[in-house]
Length: 73
Image (cartoon, rainbow, N blue to C red; front, top):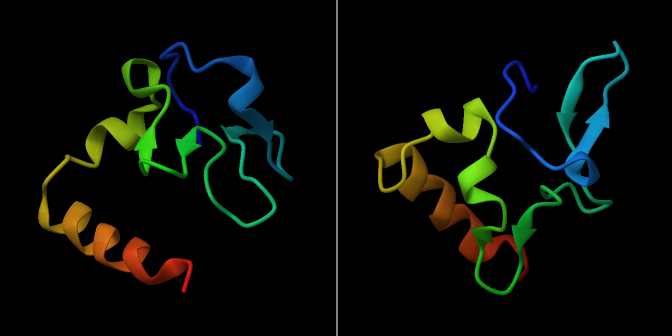
């Protein structure tokens, strides 16, 4: 959920069932701002607060990346 204005481009914003702004997800469930080739955020400088709090290289981040490695198999 987007709870602060970080400048996320409108094309990456969706409205959830309760009227809140959220990051747009594609049909496969992945964030629309994710570059599938590099697995990097295409709007990193304007990413939402939740993404800013998910520290790059943290244990949570590394665990998620391990999961991503097998997501398309």
